[in-house]
Amino acid sequence: MGQHHQPIPALKPTAGEPIEEVLASKDDEDKPAYDAQGFDYGKYVISLFARNFYNFKMAALTMAFAINFLLLFYRVNSYILVRL
Image 1 (cartoon, rainbow, N blue to C red):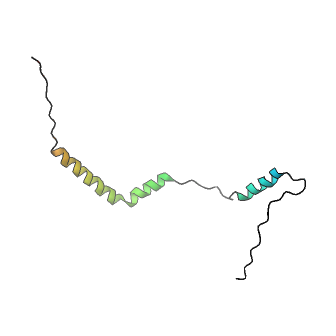
Image 2 (image 1 turned 180 degrees about the vertical axis):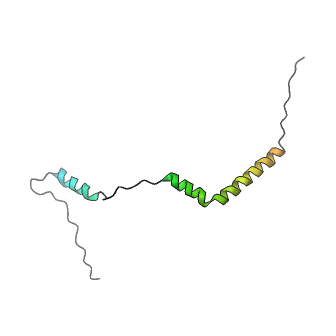
Image 3 (image 1 turned 135 degrees about the vertical axis):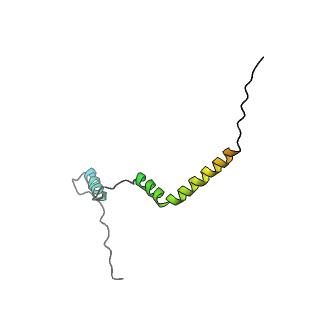
């Protein structure tokens, strides 16, 4: 309750100071003191596969079983057309 917030000072150019310098000084204040690193998508994908390895393995085995079961009854008929 006893906290008092001070108002944010406005950027006003003084006499003889160009507006470009005032705006440039504001840009310098907005920049972080550290370099922001980008998101590492490769590491994210590897982590996703590592966390769900068992689930991916079971999905692959189920899909392979289904494909093999379909191919078991798939019959290729090849006819050689011979003209006499």
